[in-house]
Image (cartoon, rainbow, N blue to C red):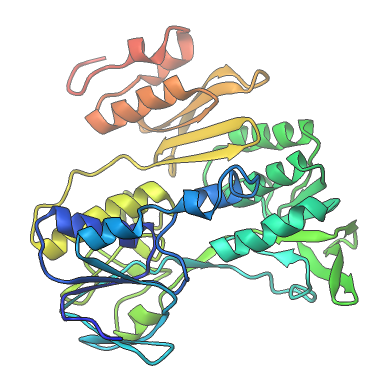
Length: 410
């Protein structure tokens, strides 16, 4: 196998597929090769921890595009080939094939962070990052009666909701003092703790895992640092991801907790761009890693524009969502560094929004089962409008009526 010189996109991820497509939309006619280690063409990852585990969709339903779609646009998709070595103009795969290129894009994503405790390699211990992980978990969950989820982040909470819906007794173990603490305010963390417990899940905060115990090579319990033993016949470890930087490091690219890129998705080497979960980009307060579909797609469009010599697309407001049972959390903006919040709605009714402010400026929203407020804030952030905190706090009127357009005094 070989490829004509052109653009090589390493990583058949959502970012990789978008980058290839955006190059074509920009009028780029040079050959494009999209290569991925998995045996599948690019697919959606978010449903893996939700609809896919619940068997509401299948692998075919996850595909981003059909094979014919790529072929019609002259995008060669190579699956089942992991690039293991990169030089200035060619890539070598694990099976010994060579791919040549003039321009290079790295959309290699991230890998799961492993739990470094005794017993973490027992049968019945799962991770959830790719389709193969989801297939193993989807097969095992229906037969599991006692599930322990290690990690109270989005993937862990989504999967724990699925396990509970399938009839398992579920315990979530989180080392920090609150759930999804890197992403939401304490009031939102506490809401989700209570909401999951109302649905039958036990949540243990501030609890570190010391070991996983088994018999006959199969998991039987999770042992916490305080000696507590939680019976389990299935363990899901969801303690975050690590950006894949090995290939970037081979090229001598600057990497600091990810491949460092500028606002145009350029790496430290001319002609090489990167996009998606593998990157670190400029943020309001310094280097920023965003792990979301929206960021992967938006950054891929920027990277394609850079390679094609086109103007950078307009900056998009970051957004994200998480479905946990019948709770839909929608996030827009960046809440890091906030110094004020306003809670609107009814937490007990599981329908509310939290608005974030920094130095009086609206910066983000977390909305639970409250799509209207989410959309209003997302639109305001995109247009430069605001919703003054005092108005949002005092008035029960819809947020749309409280919005102050950009440039207009409040």
